[in-house]
Image (cartoon, rainbow, N blue to C red):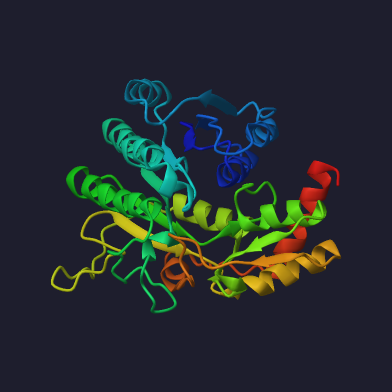
Length: 336
């Protein structure tokens, strides 16, 4: 059995996806550049969850390295590719745009070339709810135009969707882009609100609450994200027989190309999210209310009907339950 190649396997979503595949005795080759965007020790701890499995192989590699990526594809000959590696973070993209150009654009181009040259059965890649940018009609649907990104990070994710479509059209490569909506849960990223809030509250520090606590997010639990990814990975994109080039649907195509939202379809006000965290921790946070930051979207909400129609799945984890599970993991992992 040719392995599944997972890029960003030391990341939050990548580790969980690798665990899921390995539990089914599906071999996984995972790559990650282990950059210092956040604590490398956490990334190594995630890898430690995977390394004992004999079906797992880790390669430290930067996807922006064209020669190294070409060599890896030729050696591994993956059956499917799950591309999760990227420079993450909306706010960081304002200060360090070059990192996003290298990883999210050049790196993605290298992934596409590898898939083209080695007849990969299906490329599934991470897009983001950030692509909806300045859109205000809720919930966000894949059929909506997404031509007004408000951060460079979002622009690179939109570019990934366009690049994937060109390869699907020209070379017949099945590609599926997944627009993730604010993923949270055990082993999460330290730059995300839930992790930062938990760390600060347990240390007795004040938390910074942007948008005066009125921002709205479609918080989506990691297990739901993984379930959606796995179902999509098992169902390669196909041309849409009902596609109308006179009234094009951006989420489908005459090529083997699909775009899906993966969100909880239950938008939550940030202050309610914080209340759930306070309940899980058994304490009240000290809060500093601040205006919305540049590049941040005020609200996100996912229309998940297309995903449900495609793979018969829609995320549904209640926020209170998901937050409690994160807190339980955090206390155990950091022994606090």
